[in-house]
Length: 640
Picture (tube, rainbow, N blue to C red):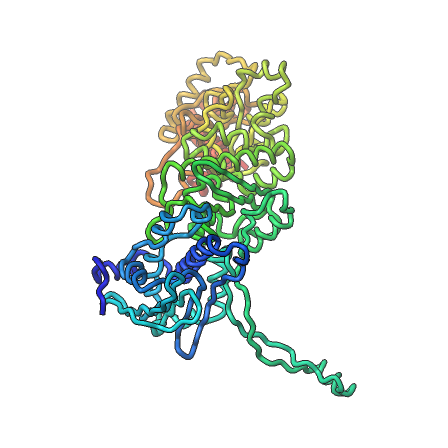
């Protein structure tokens, strides 16, 4: 029994139980190693017999044996000598491939996947015993390497006819929470190859069961033919099936691909349903070379707005799927983007399950981000209806990108936003401030503010007194109904020099509105109302813009009434945040004249009741509701 070189039982246990988070990847690692071995043989064979060399004759075979509970991964690659077995398999994480790369100079060497070492030891996650039988191309010798774990391994002579390697896994016994027998199932093996190794350049083959209809005798009678049609017989046959596709779409020239190819790949890879809105085929060569197929979906994933949703792109290296969701390649506000990225230059952690971030990876992420944003702008310009469909599905994430970046991303994202306004639906901010080319209008609006109003629904906003007054003047008002809208606007501050102005804030005044001097009686009335509503409002003041309504609530400061409602609905024990409310009163309204009369006549109780009723009505208009609905209802009944 030979001991592992410079490795302890603790290290091997870490390899088996800690480094890999998903047992299924053992097959990915063994297939990757088999592909490496075939690549090495390919490179050496090119030197010796290029005239009759046929790369397609090399393959990888999966051989499950339920009776013996073994799974064999067989290749016809370069094989290993006894010394190479001892060196490559006896030293954990020793890379025979790395040495081969350094020794060879051909271009194909760069695409060899990785190392026969760390990945190989993933086998022990599912196997209690591992055998490696290999015949070397170098000296024609055959040897068997056997290990049952950290105690060590042995190497002995073997008899293998063809050059190549068999890795034979003696699977562990099933447990209550672990079904190792599933790795003998044709369905499981086919699924794992499709998921992780579908684009390995060599054929991955397995003998599978097939139900084949038993052919009818040529001399069968009409009666026998009818009986055979109604109740045909089947027999079980075995046939060899290629499990992988081999040629990934991202390596094919764009000119050779049709729309159907991109759509089929989108559906087959499970990236989405139906037809995507747009796709991007990205090819980058340079310091970091990579290829990507990115999709903008036409439907929202069912779990998109849940914690279970995982953003990110599928990651491939040398045809091997490394990660399902490489989230560092996409910012959160582009989490709806689906697709794949392939590169031979990825720097991965030891288990090849985690991407190591560095300057090159950050540069790739920035490039992908820019290309997606450019595609969205292009869609916005070329296909307005498609873009409106997209924005209806994922516009909230773009708004969140501005808010979560504290406005840092507004230059990239603000031109992509759409809003419903008093002048139309789905209008961009450029349309609201005046599109380029409308020079006179643009100059006139150069310093004009972008007016907005918040509310729970479009119809509710249209009924607001201030909004109605602005609509009568044909002024454009942006309607904000999403809970994140106002937070986004606050983070943006302005758009191309046009500041945002809430028409429901205390400092907003209608254009042309002149402030009239109040009589001493009216000033005293408002002062008394403010004192009565102390704790509810910070001020009571006259509003010349109100015509039909007696009063409305506005807000001072950064917290609006809509933001108060949004924050109040957040889970947790957060401190209650309230807007500084101002009761704006129409001094010419009959209700206000009634209040003045109560003051003159000394009817204090009526004055207090009407003031409270006026305030409650203003709260209802603002969507806040009333704190004491019983008292409010009784006051209405008394009036009736």
